Length: 162
Image (cartoon, rainbow, N blue to C red; front, top):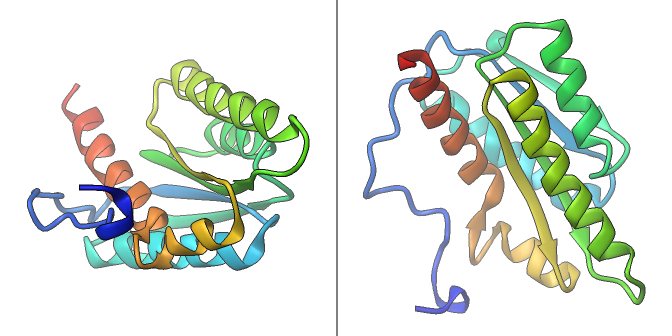
């Protein structure tokens, strides 16, 4: 089934787990704020719905998606978190800038996770236009922020086992 016909944020078929007592940082880009604000809202709602207390969530605003990398790294250097959720939105423009930023952000977030041996979740939309971004930030395709939060909970719980 193509993504044009379904909600990509449907987790009704899986057991997410209880996030009570887990600590999360949500690093969110201020660029494309209409989209990233919706992603943040979805992430916070999901975390709290699964038992995370408001005091166990730090929100770190960074200028753009590229800065998600250093924001996540600083969070893990300075505080103890069970997982970091990175939320951003990069929309295709007329230049290759999109390709460079998307590649750097994906690799950078992965490198931070490896460096700190902690889950660092990629919740960055990489879309062709604003409409696609809004569709994935609470629109007809669900909310990538919710997806990132569920992933963070699951990975934090797995991390506690190993």
